[in-house]
Image (cartoon, rainbow, N blue to C red; front, side, top):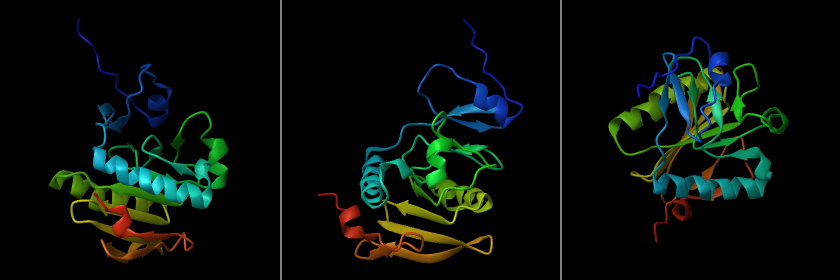
Length: 190
């Protein structure tokens, strides 16, 4: 039996689509591209940060990989590894875990780089531009391979590097000053 892939003219059309599965899709040029599962290491890092932020802000303000962000460009949506949302987002996301361009941006987006040059380019260049365009105040790029975290802060509509923290550093976030993150604890593989 031949299956026909759906095409979408608008993001609103895409939002109405339901294939009765738990799959995540990026909308690229009107077509659905299935998002592959994360690596175990990336999930471990995201879970560690989820717990840290949940203790600081409460679990309702911290969203994992299932949160969808509408962005400009291609693809039209992204699924960050971790997102810190605003208080008003909690109610807005009750029916669908999607932050639209018409909503206020989340406070922080974290991407954990998967192995490979294409993935690095996607997180360091493509997503950086899209998140900057959305007005997301803070963006972290975690590179497990190099054991670094690049922290970017939005200043005058452009991301500026706050710091490139490595394994033995204590990360300080411009938006979450009370967070003290020891990177040796984060990257500990023991």
